[in-house]
Amino acid sequence: MQNIDTLSRHGLFDAKVPRYTSYPPANHFQNDVGQHYQLSWLSRVQRNEAISVYVHIPFCKRLCWFCACRTQGTKTLRPVDAYVEILKKELQTIAQNLPQGVKMNRLHLGGGTPTILSPETMQDLLSEIFGTFSTTRGFEFSVEIDPTEAAPTLLQTLIDFGMNRASIGVQDFTPAVQEAIGRLQTLEQTQTVITFLREKSVDAINLDLLYGLPNQTEQSFRTTLNHVVALNPDRLAIYGYAHVPWMSKRQVMIRPETLPDTKQRFDLAYNASQILKAANFIAIGIDHFAKQSDSLFKSYKAGRLRRNFQGYTDDQCHTLIGLGASAISRFHQGFSQNAVATSAYQNRISTFGLAGHKGYALTSSDALVSAMIEVLMCRFSFPTQELQRDFPEQKDAIHRSAINLMKLYPDVFMTDPAGLVMRPETYPLARIIAKEIDMFTTKTNAHAAAI
View 1 (spheres, rainbow, N blue to C red):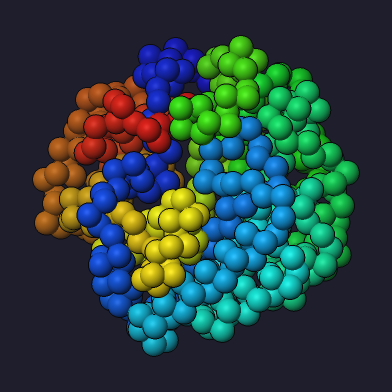
View 2 (view 1 turned 180 degrees about the vertical axis):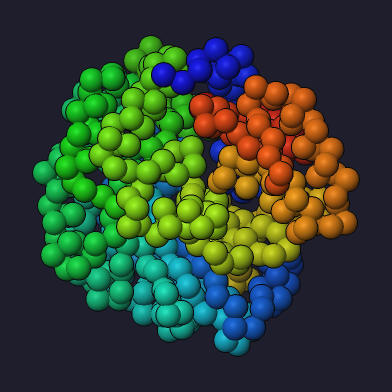
């Protein structure tokens, strides 16, 4: 087993640190960086640039108790259909303000539950999206799918519009765990959806799991993982459950005494990695696994792995346009987040056409820190020479950061001609080390989550 003493000494079992899917983390976004910035940054996207598009569907027919995403329950599709009409207006405003020639390289529908839409409403939304953006040759269209809300007619609609990657939430197949998190989903339901997709030639399948859930044991999670391996996905994400009931009120339904302790959480994650490696999955970053045929692995091997709001990605686009309530856009100049509450988002779109609520304008120092954290999270290294080449005006700051990291973590880093490299057994410390590079104070961090 990995060096527990080293990991413990550096705070792995106690730390509450950001996931660093962006820098700065979203809790540092500022209220005075709103629609004016959003509009300006849209107009400054490069002509003919390839961009990514994310569409947030915040509705669910059931609210899973573990989830901390921005979602809301609904018993009918009326509010969903009304929301899609607002999304279409947002798309129209964005199209009016983007330069000509911008193409869509990635489209991701997330939630919430995107598959809650009726086939007719989904067709309406996708027709608007593809009428707004032309696509690149290597275009990828991915959708988050809930197998309990995935009618064949809706899946067929997605396939007809070119969906070529499916991301399926599993979390855990153990009934006692599912009951404790308010998410009942059978293995058979999941198998049915995957079989349908593969019969329609959608072969790129991602599965998402969680460790650290209530009533989860080493043996129960092993059983779930064996089922997952048999489902034969191309890519897996195994995240640690973050119990933050002060942020996500629905989590009060989960009894803290049923949660694994920090040492048990580590054992769950470590054992999962061993099971998946034995099944020929390659570890990617701190929480992803992929087959060698998958594009994420190929990106990792080529040193082109990136990190965004969905976690690790092979998406190389610099610009991400986020649509919908709470969605975050990433531009060269900074981040813009739409109003979080669905009603506030809809009111802003109806009034202004855009819903930018807060954001962050990146300085040159922020851009450097962002690059340092991303390369640390993706490659477990601090490539001094590469960073100094990319940020020549900040060579001294990069050198000081390297010295500081080596001083703080002499048992974590090794030196090589290009800079610093983490020892493989210390990879779980990546987020903790990233915090040392972070220029913001994270002692009281609303977006911090347990390792």
